[in-house]
Image (cartoon, rainbow, N blue to C red; front, side, top):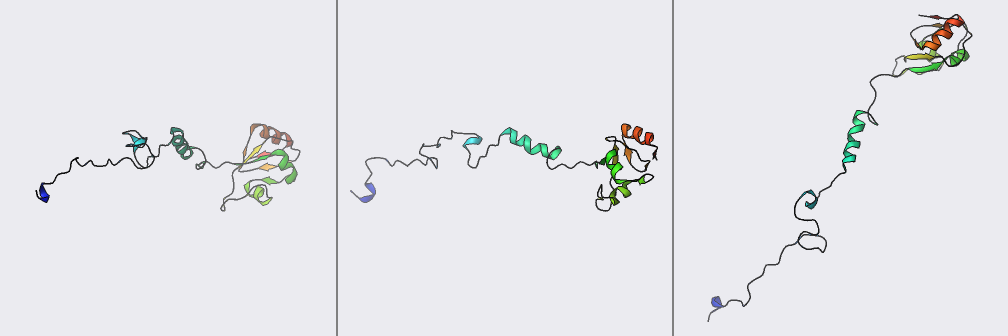
Length: 143
């Protein structure tokens, strides 16, 4: 008998390389196939995808393309202007009722809340229907 003739009594049994992590055997409790069985699989809830899409359309990150006008009521004009004064975006900014953004005069809308007893002249401002009636009743002009 020589060394190359010697054979082991039992055949070599290769140790099975089982799933890493956990004490659950071959697949470590992940099942066999599919997204959940893969390493690094992060399954996001469907609602999160919707939430991520929505702000791009409307919510947090979306700035409106239309510039909203500065809203002033008649009782504010009653306090800050004298009879015969011109009411336009420049005079409104001068009196501190609105701010000019990056050198541009703001759009102004006059609403009809309050009473007006002074004759005011309005130019380059938009005016609501109820405010228009009260201005004309007080003797003011609208250009």
